[in-house]
Image 1 (spheres, rainbow, N blue to C red):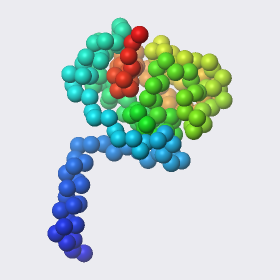
Image 2: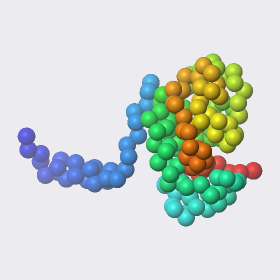
Image 3: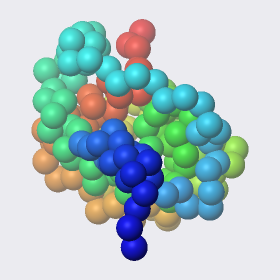
Amino acid sequence: MRLGPILAAAALATLVSACGQSQPAAPVGGDQAGSAAAPAPPMSDADKQAALAALPAPYKTADLANGESKFALCQACHTLPPGGANMTGPNLQGVIGAKAGEGHADFKFSDALKASNIVWTPDKLDAWLTKPSDLVPGTKMTFAGLSDPKDRTDVIAYLMVSTGYKPK
């Protein structure tokens, strides 16, 4: 089959524009968080470093590249952008400071997580990322955890910077 020149040019333009960009995983159960909103422009490296420097210790000295790399384990189930889709897990925008099991009316959290009364502070996130089932027995999250404390610090800092967290 031979593509016409206009169709071939359009296909090439689409491929080139997506070069180097990762594609989000398909949401489970459809788009549930109003992802029709235009995505925010990516933060510059200078913006990321300024946001990192504003974080409390030990997060202000975290390695964002390592945090992003380790967060790749989370991306199969979670999105970060404002209005991002809930997938197997909820969108994580605004998670820091939020009560566990709330904030996404269209996401079905486990009864165990809803009953935990946890507020997602950095310390609670660290415990969660160590081994979710130890912090909340009965959680639906099957993630085994990150054993390295430095990796957890880096992921939490990456999450703070990527979701626009502002220390009080």
